[in-house]
Amino acid sequence: MSNSHTYELKQRAERQLETRRRIVAAAVELHSTLGPSRTTVKAIAERAGVTRPTVYAHFPDERALFTACSGHVRATVPPPDPAAWREIAGPSARLTAALRDLYAYYERLEQLFANVERDAPLMPIVAEMSAYRFRYVDDVRELLLEAWPKRGGSRERLRPALGHALAFGTWQSLVRREGCETEHAVRLMVAFAETAAS
Image (cartoon, rainbow, N blue to C red; front, top):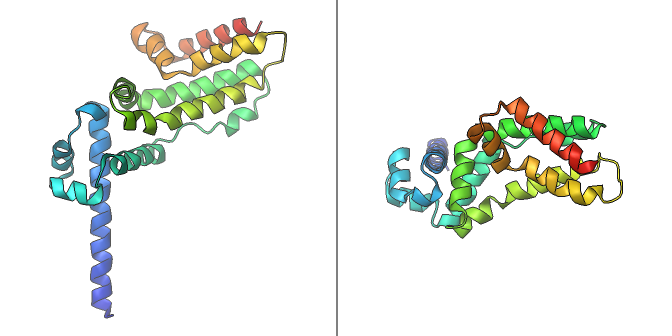
């Protein structure tokens, strides 16, 4: 194989990869602004500057496209790493740090998360692809729970309180609908958890 042929193949592969990136970025942008259920292949193609057949050539079905979009979001705006919180011994301080980081993450992806939560009941693939976020929140809750002392039935009360505090909908309700500053929302949820644990 000649050097020029190898170079051409490499250039072609790079162009295909760039086209794929543009399609995924266009789909994520439309999912954020319109929502998955209102995003068409035609709109994705127009936004990416390609044809509909090109979109289908890269992503032959809905699952392939949604898997790529989910991976793109997690790679470009990953959820906070809980490892740093594990180093914080005090339960209230650990929860405060987690909520500050998590609420900042929700703010960055608010439009996308709101649209995904709206569309998940309509589109099983959307519910399936967003399930990682609920698993992540469940894991965070367990990490936070282990910092609280075990007293009587406090764990049974604390578990749902922490789940509520960690939920995207809770942040959205407090900050967007009730007009709380994020730090005030954090303090409210820490006080809520402390009451549940007492």
